[in-house]
Amino acid sequence: MENKTTTNDLTRVLSGLWEYTVCDASETSDGLVVEVIATRLDAPCPVCGTLSDRVKSYRISTVVDSSCFGRRCRLLVRRRAFRCVNAGCERKSFTEATSEVPRRARVTTRCRVQMGVAGRDCSTASVAAEFAVSWPTACKAIKAQAEQVIAQRPKTPPRRLGIDETRFWWKVPWLTGLVDLDTGELVEVIEGRTSKTVTDWLETLSDNDQQQIKVVVCDPHAGYRHAITTSLEQATVVVDRFHVAMLANKAVTDVRRRRIWEQQDRRGRKIDPGWRARKDLCRRVENVTDNGWSRIIAAMQADTGTDSIEGDLAWTWAAKEHLTTIYDSSLNRAHAHRQLLWWYSYVADHPVPELVRLATTISKWENEFLAYFDTRATNGVTEGLNRIIKHVKRLGFGYQNTDNYRLKILYRCQPLQPLQSTPPATTDPTAALSL
Image (cartoon, rainbow, N blue to C red; front, side, top):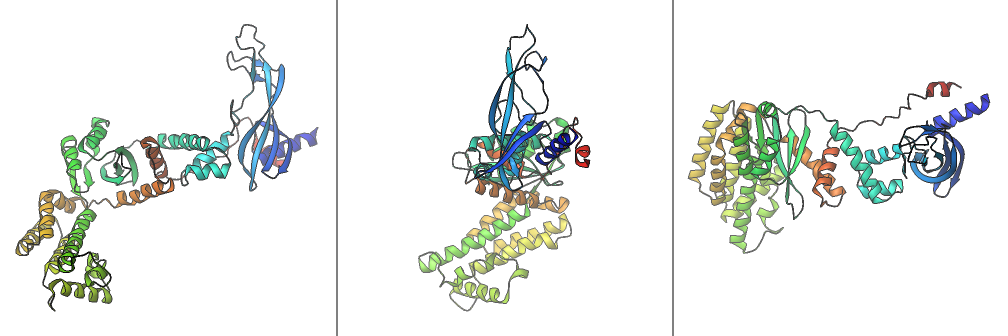
């Protein structure tokens, strides 16, 4: 008897099934097949809760389990059907169930958890193929694990909030992400990018949580600003410096394309100096190489058609550099304001249409532009999470269900937690290992 107990405990430790006894095991072309039976000889009735040991029959069911030593594993579970010993119970018979293999389950609990963890970084189809289950089964496991992880997130309201949008699909073009800039946590993903979208989400917060938000960073989108100024009167709105740089680079690119069309009556090609310098023109001065300077000068000379570089492209490029330099050279808000006034005068002296458009945008967002020098807050963390969101979309080859997409995004942006493999309290694995 002592040897038999030792063998059962050792197989239980190796299999990790603390509520079952291993009866047999065989290896097939599809992997490992393990036959198990519940260790307990009785089971409670699911209706009245009365323990019964009167076995009516045995039923064998195949259950998908986690991989074992690099092999796919299937369990042949010998389920006992018991008769209820309570004469007054309406349930005459029932089948035993455990926490490791729940009632009517075709996948073990630990396998579902592992599928859910694997689905954090993989597509649902790849998880289904890895565990040899159907796509709906893998989807349910991933969804359950994601909901559990998301429910455990701390509920601390953000002090500095970042707002930015990403593309979804043609029926719902945009999703708005809200990020805690201090912790780097994705707080929520909401559908749309309108003022009402953000306002409705802010109204779900308590008054105390709303008062905690002191700074909000967003791109120059009027809908975001309107939602923040109407719902969070105490918050300082900051326009993201990287979006300002993007607008400046867009002005340079638009001038370059317009001038090529005016001169060549076609779009740019490799033979055009402006096309060859397209990337160099969007770099900061300190990042331009010697070859890059040669391409920039050639593009500016081609823009004027002479050896001079004084033209629309050169003026717009210089304005772009002056604008982005304000962020690094200004000591405070007042200093930045003086430099911005000089920049306005420079644009007035060189009224290139694209440059005037850029200056008009900056003037409309001047307070938010200068607020950066009071807070030094940017949307860098938000842009980093946008990269993860786009990666999730690529892995799934696109999504159409907003709820599933939101759930997958929030799940992926949470820190990865190690799997817990603690046996039930009724089992002493240390004693089994010491035998």
